[in-house]
Amino acid sequence: MGKASKKESKTKIIIFFLIILFLSGCANQLPPGGGEVDKIPPTIEEFYPQNGITNFLEDHISFDFSEYVNKRSFKGAVFISPQIEGELKYNWSGTNVTIEFPNKLKANTTYVVTIGTDVADVQNRNKMAQSFSLTFSTGNEIDKRSIIGKVFDNNPSGVMIYAYKLNGDTLDPNKVKPDYITQSGKNGSYKLDGLSAGKFRVFAVRDKFKDFLFQPKQDEIGISNRDVIFIKNDTTVNNVNFKLTKNDSEPPRIMKAIMTDSKHVIVDFSEDLDQLSIKFKNFSIIDSTQNKTYYFKNIYRKHPKKDQIILINDNQLIGTSNLFLHSSNIKDVHGNTTEKDFVKLIFSNREDTSKPGLIYTFPSSGGTETDYVGQKFEFYFSDYLDTSTAKSGIDFMDTYNHKIGFSTNYIDDASFSIKANIDLLPVKDYKIVIDLSKIRNKNGTSADSIYVFNFTTINGLNFSGVSGEIKNLNTDNPVYIILVGIDKSKKIYKKLLGKDLKFIFNRVISGNYKLWCFIDSDKNGEYSFGTVVPFKPSEKFSYLKLKLELKPRWMQTDVVFDFENKIN
Image 1 (cartoon, one colour):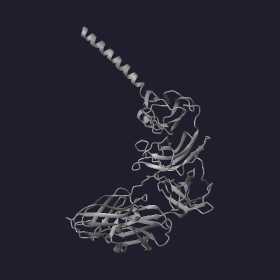
Image 2: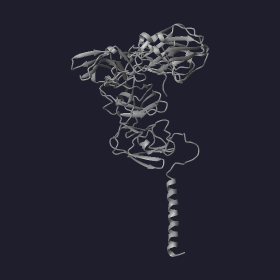
Image 3: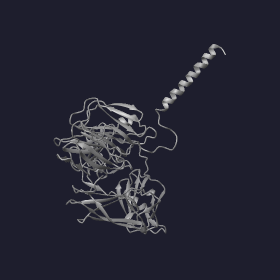
């Protein structure tokens, strides 16, 4: 072997060992692989400084996790109250992170550092189950005042809890960032620590962009039923609970109006509409060229769209004119009303060739859990239908083709509901037969077929129920109690309580349920979420801690519902 070959061989050996050394070093930076799928969320095992320490004058804090965590998720989950101006610096070493403050901390101030539940591990993106709080003071004392509560929502994990110290009553969380911050855990529970004496307004915000501002168009918000006042003595305020909603104060607006043919005007709105405000008399066409106004006689909402309505035009419009669609008294699902609105109408004189087809039924055909008492059957069509001929094409029958009397209610001009005039029998097969040739639209066309809706009534013996009473509730206002199914059926039962605050639900479909109630302060029969600006508190509510497992043929009795049940 020549010198060049020996040199090349030696070089290859050195490169090989360098690669091994490099890979060994890299291996120390990576989480272990293989084995069972990691489902364990990361936890904070060590931290600096000690929780509750006073006279803390350092310029950094640190946390040591149980496993490798995603650095970006950690950075987005760090919340410091009161807020620190400037940009934090993060220094990582394996599972340990040190946070350096950009400036000197304020003197005689209690700080609470919250690590939120968005922190995820590297291995399998498992998120922290609960937020973690570290409290320290730059003075001689720790502010020990706390607010404890819960966010009641289908997805409460990671909802931001914002507390604002009030100097007056003019607070707009859309413009002002909170003084104190924490995050709810997987079960919705939260705890705000280290609060000073004073008056606080607290909100729960699903802050989409984590900018610490409530953006009404994108963020859901929960409004507390009261402001929290702390006096000099350290204390804890419990049960500051929230239900999330879109706190919309903007009325609906027409986005566009398009004629798809000479008969149909499709109108898109900026948001979902209240079904009761969808009336043909609230709309008109203005021909500004001819100085004429045209009106409608039919309107419907094409299921399942709630932000779109369709008007049926019977007028002879002039396509060369300036045409505008006008609306008035249109209400959204939050109760906001547009008094007047208009938009330019896009004209079409295309021939109407549509046919009304069945697009949705409730409940679904073929169901086996239909109630035999008072059940409504809803049928939604793709187009306007002539109500004068529709009912003549409907038959309600049992399996022996014996006809059953029924009543029809038109939800709008493209849908109707059917209800038997008598109580049906349990565990029996029935059918509703619809001759679609009788379901005609404005141009007289229809589908030339027969539709059969089959269903089986539920076994009456399988019904369940629950009874009990509410304790620790003192009010002169109406109180409503609601039983909500958490199984596939999502059944909801609601009752107005008497003065004795006792309740009973009979004929409940078996399954798992949540039980909650609220004080109807505004006496409108519905739970009121409150408003942000101007501030109006939500109505006070409470949930029974336990899940109810209601079994067939069994009434669960003597349920004690403690309205002031504390969240621990």
